[in-house]
Length: 222
Figure 1 (cartoon, helix red, strand yellow):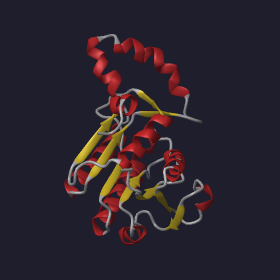
Figure 2 (cartoon, one colour):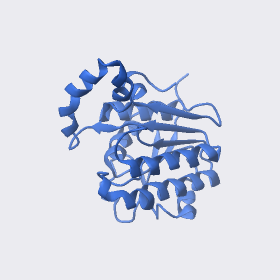
Figure 3 (cartoon, helix red, strand yellow):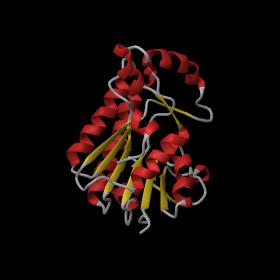
Figure 4 (cartoon, helix red, strand yellow):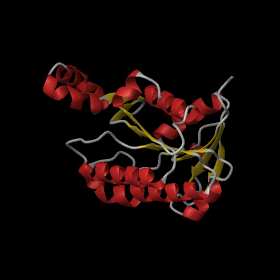
């Protein structure tokens, strides 16, 4: 028997990952609804239904999630850096809290959250906001998948490829190997494949499943 058709809502659908995952889901026959800021519809990838709303308003989000069984939360600060620390709380964490609360009011049965690899020695404010969102999601009781990339290589996001030799060297040193693998680089294709597979094969009800860099790179979701 084939996989079930999912009704997937995506917040942050106009961003780097959102524009990549939307056509993948549509090609597989899933119904995709892009929950977007007013006036940003031109940036949604073809194939998705668009729903303009306030992404920080729980009531509006709950309406946007109506009749969807899955939500993928991708809202976040573009090009994160230490100087953007206040935005991580104001945008990343606040939007996640709102989406989790909205999902609890709706028929959503699977919440997919793209977080960040942790622990890590840099970007403490960013990691803190994402870790807090994970905590709120875990305590909500929603069935969830948390995906933890470090850096996603793709168009316009390729400079860290210069670090590949350093990663290879660290992988040979026992004391550095675990950190190098946890904070490894993944490709946009690997991320989209992981997200699609996670959506098509959700975890058991009430479970929070964690997919870190090794799972993103080397195997599909369980």
